[in-house]
Length: 321
Image (cartoon, rainbow, N blue to C red; front, side):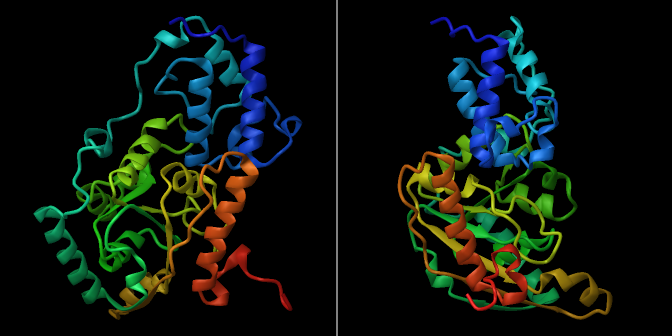
């Protein structure tokens, strides 16, 4: 079946509207000549936009298409080219998650290698940290679940792997694969890497495969390390995944690890507090940007309630509220 013809003007208008919807802006607020990084387009949001764009165009997007660093105008130029649909060669380096079939994994059991890895991580955490954990039983013993976490330290995965009672697949930005220690840990745990700002629909499909296969998926809704030490604005990807898969979201927070460097330089163990909250059921079939935003705010405020006030950031309740 021949894909429908889309002119440059059609593509430009679609992009402005879709990006504006995801970011809750008016379409005329999207300047076609301004890089999309200006608008804070994160990796999951870019993947959602890319998926809709691919369906609307009726063809797969080029693997090397970058949404976030481009402008709407340059994207429209690229996608309107007659040869664009045939140009599929990827310039993206192969990632560990690209070689894993997440639909074939047995999420009801943890392979021996991953059990040994978890034992090693827990030993390392005990050696370097004094950890208190509350509410682990909030994670259902079986069935699919999304774990939403805050993000204060590049080694957050260490403490989360040690605390989570079930095998968990993490969805993380692809640059973490190249980080010392944490990259090795994530690869061994079969993390799913998502390209920041690229048309990475494959990463979203893998994440949904984990949930539809009955697994636990760990996601940091903020999309990046907090530069302030408090919660920053959550991205709608968490609500999109939960709604698409129809799974509960368990909020889990950790704090204290941001002082790890100071403690370790003094040869002291860092005190880390980890707290799980009760599962949240988001409304099914969230579709519009306002629905996804409300679902995301529900997750983020649940994280905020689990944290001490000084860590709640933009989700801290106003005085007297």
